Image (cartoon, rainbow, N blue to C red):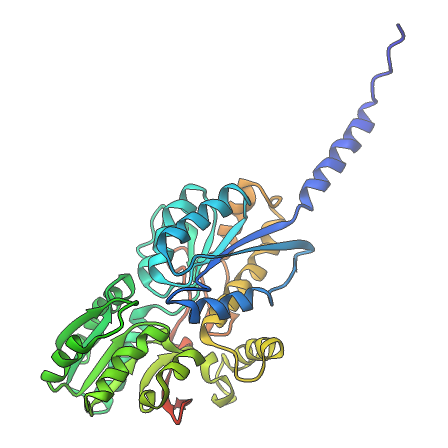
Length: 386
């Protein structure tokens, strides 16, 4: 029987080169889990909408986004993460919308050695940096940064005593700890500290305790529309002190649900919330306005929110890091995921919707004081406070 001739080495080399080139042009796959339903839906919906605006090509590579809804539930967030890692074999994950959900995802992405950019607010998600958290990055401002903004505003406006009411979960507890530090620095006395669940229908008992202490101000550490409940109850019971909220309420749904009861409320927020009101000298105005323009072009005037801005900034971080990671490895491989993690850590002076990002091995948020402004609610609208 006549044997077929062996392939010359040059032909084999060309075949291998072609195969390698084909692997290098595999799609980049980004997994996303957000809270598009449930108590945190006012966060997750604009985040989901923003993902649809992110670039479909990075560094010459096609990008696929696999978007899932975790229903504001920690168990579902963890299940979505497993699915994205195992079934979709994603190169990176964006999400989730809340601190508890994001904390539930850390072990999974760390074990899979896949970078994750969380949209949750608490510093606990990325601090302290360790073997697990080295895979986690973050776009929302830390609670201590925003706590200091509130404490400074209180001290500058005659507040001496403060009542605190926050969610009975990681978000509320994180704020309780960080605001206590900020209050101590500004010599504010936290007289009473209360908790409530995101799903509670009444906080009358907690509000009566707050009002019994006759504090100069109350800080509500909640996010999304459930944060309106204590404020409304305080107003209904005749509270006349100052009411502060966290940056977790900075969206139109909060204004809609809270109505006139929210007027006079003060809060720290990312510059994107009042981008059009910022002075031209603000270093974030241009990049914040770019996000607002993109979102409103798709969803109408006045539709942009700070939460969508966090997702936008996650997309910008990937747009910055992916092209460099592609020079080191092919998508879909452990080497690419490791390279992407390393490149995210090297992002410098990147303007985003919320601030200027400077990542490092010690800092996986990378924002400074340029990422916050004080805002007051007046006549159902956000008003920049210089």
